[in-house]
Each structure stands twice: as C-alpha cells, then as structure tokens.
Image (cartoon, rainbow, N blue to C red; front, top):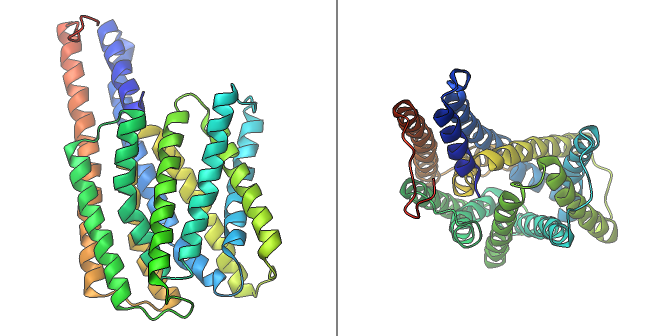
Length: 351
C-alpha cells in the first residue's frame, strides 16, 4: 500500500472522529506531501554535479569501483550510525525480508557500476540523460506490476515531457562531443546507461515497497553495506591508483558529499511521494549536470540542450504543481465530508 493511500485513510479517520484537536491534521498531511516533493527537488540539485565530478576523477586514474566504494561507504556509515542510535533491530524479519534487502544491495551495485562505466565511453551528462530518459518507462511499468500504483495522467504527461527533454539533451551532447577520454564506443555507453536504468528502476520500486514495513535507516544500511562491500572488493582487485593530487582529491570529496546528501533527500522523497512522481522529479538533475560538465569538462551547451532543459522543466514542474493541487483538493473534499458527517462506502459495501 502506498503512502498516499495511508495519508487519505488517516485524514478520513480524523475527520470522521470530529475531534477539534484534529482540525489541522489535513494541513499537516498536505505539508507532508509537499515536503516529499521538496526533498525530490533537493535530491536533483545535489546529485546533478556527480556525473561531471566523477568523470573528472576517473579521467585521473580512479576506477568506477573506487568511485562507487567511496560514495556508498559514506552513506553506509551515516545509516549505520542512525540505526545504532535509534536502537533499530538490525536483523531481517524473515528470510524473505532478508532476500529483499540483499536484492536492493545487489541492484544498487550493478546499476551504478553500469552508469559509472558509461561515463568512460560517453560524456557523463549524456549518460545521465540516457539514464533519466529510460527510467520513467521502467518505473511506471514495474510499479504498475508490483505496487499496483497507477500513475495519473499528469504524471504520465510530465514524464513524457521529461523523456523528450533528456533525449534532446543527449542528442545535443553527441553533436558537441569533444571528450578527452574514451568516447568512441557510443553504442556501448548507451547500452550500459539503459541497462543501469532498468536495474535501478527495480531498486526504486523494491525500495518503495520495503519502506512500507522497514525503517528507512535499516533499509539504506543494508542496501549500501552490500554495495560498498562489492565495490570495495572490485576496487582492491582492479585499482592501482589511490593517491590523488590536491585538486582532484578535493573534487572527489565534494562529489562524495554531494552524492550522499542527494541520496538522503531521495530516500526522504521516496517515503513521502509516489514512486512515479519521484522518478520524474529527479530528472531536474539535468540542469546542474550540464552546468557543471560545461565548467569542468568543457562541453559547451548547444541550442538543443536549451530546448531539452526547457522540456524537462515543463514536465517536472507540471508534476510538482499537480501533486500540490491533488493534495489541496483532497483536503477540501475530506473536510467537507467530515462536516456533513458522511460515511462513504465502497462498491463492495465496506466502509
């Protein structure tokens, strides 16, 4: 069951009880939904620079395994600290729950390794654009199958605008490609990005499902523990360079911190907003991604980039406005029903 459905049930319950102290409950739930949207937007802002900064460090000797190891190690330590502080039971609730947590960690490792490897074959913002363009289709399909979350028309329309935008952004980057590293095998880079998007979509849908019954810190801890362990093994086996120049080391630290903060906001938004809307909203990361790429790697935006960014802006903010409007209408509708003391019944006769 989605958090949106829980919000509606909670709101209806308080309104039917008629408790004067619950007059502000509907507004608090409305603010909760908007907080989820704000968290998704913040996640996009902080995750945007990561492709360019990661490519900058990879060009100077680091491997994708090292980047993923350092990125995920930071988040794992934070999640572990929160889990210990809150005295959350670290053991899985059963073997099915344990398998689900292991799947999230494996999906995280595989998807991001595909994306970081794609950075070596095509410009990083292009890889991110292909990733973002593929994600809504996969997430909508998987959420319909496994979560029974039917996306609204506005979510579908906004996602289509976002897809059109990131496709234009990707094409614009190909037109203006002057990469300083291996970017000749464009086909392989695109295949890696699409494959990573598919696997990460499974992670998003699985995380949305497990967060309904599992504390957020525990789910994040297991996911990033397994990903960190796998990336660490790959890094120590394949990597020969660990020491970096001061400038490169600074970029690496900023990249890890930006990624960590972005993922924190992502999981907050995933808990509060339906998964299809989250997938569309995080596509706003294209704005900082292309800006930082231009500044650090020298890929100047083209006219197609500008048109693509406009499409992403239209699609993402249409979803933001719709989320706010739906919450406001539900709040007014349920308040009206509560004032009239109606008991709404479903077609099967159940309240």
